[in-house]
Length: 388
Image 1 (tube, rainbow, N blue to C red):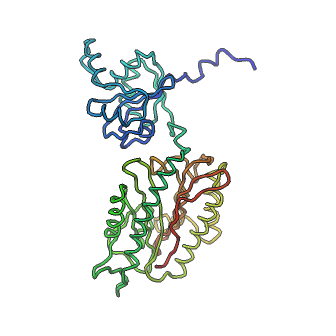
Image 2: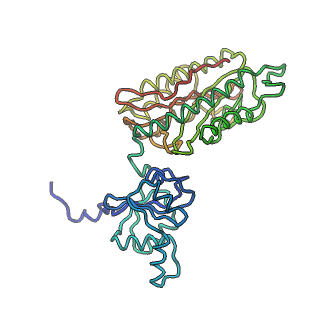
Image 3: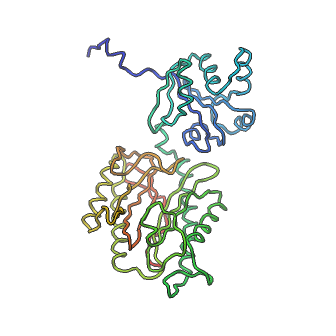
């Protein structure tokens, strides 16, 4: 095939280096690249197969011990060198400029969420900044065995906390107002969440907006729930803890009822349970996230549980079937209506169909699985049951 010389100007520029500037405590890409927790932003870049971090005096000694990078550069040393050149303003852009000029780096790839102001300054200094869509590190999606072990530990801890929350609900009694009473006082969503979050913290995990949503509170999938918990109505418990040491997450949801479920609630629960089983059966390497989700939507419709707006509220199944979990609680791949992802071996995803109807409540069941070549391996061991 002959080439067209004029088309060369349309080809993407070769990338000299990858660049991140972020705090690794809140930026999963930075944590993945360095394996180093830091509360303040710092510079990380990859060049000619080597990785570099620029650390302040506050963090440099700890970084030498803990950071998994090839070379650690001293921020204060670089600032002194720039100062010798007579520059008064020595900001992050100046530091990057000094390093990249010495290494003859001109074209830099950055993530989409790279600071806009810093990108503007670097462009003014003559650098070509090329943003890359998520995921910045493609390899982050495929979890290594150590990563899967960390996620599995997080999931087991989430199960322990969830069992404790369910036991509080199980040990409550039902009063004449159809509310739950424990130790003579109303059992509230806040008390159950406190118990769950305390157990997570005691094991070295931080809870993030734990959900204990009873009755109509459960109709909004991200409603954390509040106030006295109802009897005879679904209570959704959704727990997603993050390990303080590794940064990896777990994610689990169960729906229970203290008391008696009516036939409508039982039908809803069984529909969610059966569609989750269908999704679990379809997850394997090469499966389409969109097609799996479409199958769930169609199955709910066939079972008589439509999705749509009623009295101004969305009801039915109106969120994705699943998402990736790792150093972020929501990360690629996705299993949903607009998902472009084809599942790959080694990815870790949730499977969490749900149904939500005002006046009845919500039902959601969620497991966390590892995609394999022939199916999936479920990291979630907690049984699924409705009435307690």
